[in-house]
Length: 473
Image (cartoon, rainbow, N blue to C red; front, side, top):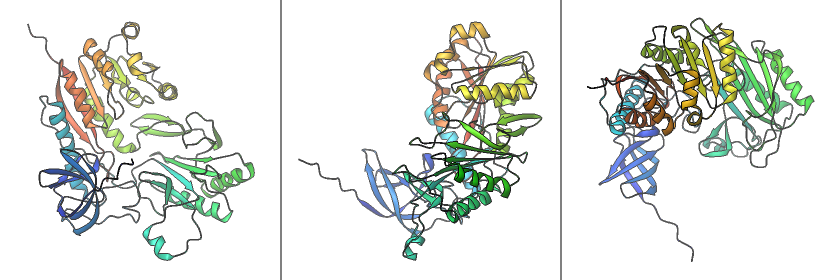
């Protein structure tokens, strides 16, 4: 016998009381805490459709706003509310910063449950628009239709070049103006879209897995260099070269023009060849007097100016005197490792992505840095007693793990090795708090500095400075 679908309630005229984790808000319905998805702010009076019920909490989506909160501000982007990015545009930036500060404090206190110093005020981003140096746009032959589109009636052109609709892999919102990346990013995207439409290029169908144009990646630098990567489904040379020639001739600012042939079921290309069609195979970013080569597959912090501030904090907390052996865990392309190398005796960088390690080595070579060594492998398998005996026991560890935080075996090894100082850079204060609680066995937190890297989102970076506890007699 088929189980009947559960009927979930509609909650009417509920007052949103506060922010919650991951960009959500919360309200109370009697004794029940309700976590709310959607464009809401504390103080809004809303109707909610519940879609999940647990014993102690419910989850719901906003379906109507009766009264708007005084905490709101006017979003500046025409795509706000439909596009999946910049979900906090309706929240004033000062309020965003306060919420991120509270998020760090709440996670460290509630999850970590350790003694903490006074947490430093969050460092705001100097730029709140046009701060990203990398954007990826997707082509689609079956674009998402907005309410405005539906009101127009018959739609003759369903092609799009833009961003994925949240929770819909197959629907792409056509973007007119994006406020995340400085020009010529918007101009390039619009020109490519117009060229493709005028010349009847097949936009890709993500469901049927057919078409030609798949993906457009634009990377910029503070030095003025510009990389454009065009991803296509098949090597139709006349179509591909015509588009690339158009880009080269129309936008002479492009210093690296590349393409990828991708016949896979997804847009990832780390396992595929990237062909340089025009210019150099990389672009160059600068931090202080250091240069970093950024290739098509390289990771680099997407807010370059704020990344410099983040790394300055990490370097300050490391408090290097010139005679220390430093381990940089989850080193990526070696940005932090090379950034602190001149203040250390030696820096050893560890990273699980082998291609990133090759970039790290190149970045050391480009900058004339000879006191770094980089190793690729799974962190928990790489950081062993044999590795430590071969490469030395660290005096200082800098760690910048992914959102999941450090593997438990990595934390165990840090406690065993017990370097004098640990600098923990995190993009997820919740998992950072978990790891700090484990490290509390031998370490005390000396300073905490939140940093806003991504305005108009709920994401926040956080840097913690840990010192080894004195051994009691």
